[in-house]
Length: 512
Image 1: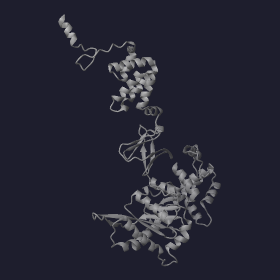
Image 2 (image 1 turned 120 degrees about the horizontal axis):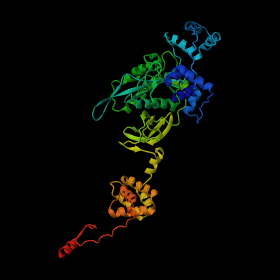
Image 3 (image 1 turned 135 degrees about the vertical axis):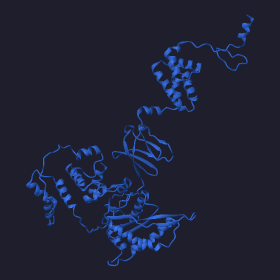
Image 4 (image 1 turned 90 degrees about the horizontal axis):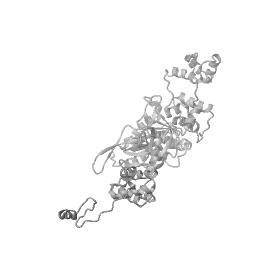
């Protein structure tokens, strides 16, 4: 469902072609055309209403229809191909003529699909024409640059990110420590900042940092990369595998960067990534300012004249690097992220959710909607639990504290308060006695306060400070039995108990 909203955004806000939209969101062009057509039939406005959730949007776009078993006449794709070569002839016109001859024939989507299958057998080379501010081609160069660690002398290779604008060939080059997701996204952020604006389409190679599942027809973007594109309001269109013509600009740009920027630095020793980037910035400036051999002007002059005015404005804040993952919520309504645990609404127990986490926050999304947000924890085995995510019974339980339990017990009587305090003090941790105290609370709902108070007094007298002892006293009616008089302390005896006889007992027995 997130892809449907992205298709509508790219269609209405950026005006991209259906094939480019399909490659950006990992669906076929036919699916893009179908979504746009269904949105027009459903008369959906753009932007979509805020109260239109995913279930309602799905119901409006895909109402249930009865399956059809009618066999329809097939069009002639070869005849269609010949007709389309004539000026002014379109698939729409051919379909109208086909429907006039066969009223029960194929609908427009399937009619076009038949022709596309036929046309796919022919390999056509297309010379691309780039509009100002439209496309930015990005990739990593093949050669790396060694950087020497000053203290140890260890060599570490730095990778080189190259970006080329389609219209002016204006080039941006930056060194990173790797080709991982973080380096890839930060290079894009720095590139947009250096350009002073955003292009409408970014064309990338099928490297793992940008494309999770490379595919000839439906590549799947890395969620963090797609999130960056949404933040900057552009589209990402991966090049087709084994089709270098799709990104010929950056292929040529990488070759030029290797020859004019990297090659002059081959004998220079660098001791930090900052030092290398300063040298790359100087070399890139010379490249962009160098005049063309067969054209007037330079990359910089064309950029200032054509590309720069046509770029989309930068957002108010740069993109904050975020990572994504899929996680399943445990039965305790917590999910695990890097050995720490974060709560979600308990209704989502055992559900799969999307987790977006940055350096400071963790966001949980279900069906495209954010359901939880936490401050990120960096320990091990730590829990971040919000009370609103708990069931009502769990919430009431955690709201109790030792002071509150003793105060409640005082409403029954001083003996009950003393019993609760004794229970809490005799546990290694007060929380271990919460269950026993809550059990006594439940007993007060079934027995009068006077009986609970008498049972507490008896339990304290006998030293049986537990929930089971109080429950047994009340169940057997022992709270109504008078307590025996407390024995007087015996001389020289530290322990006092009613069953201890003392030396006078034996003295009396001897006289007898």
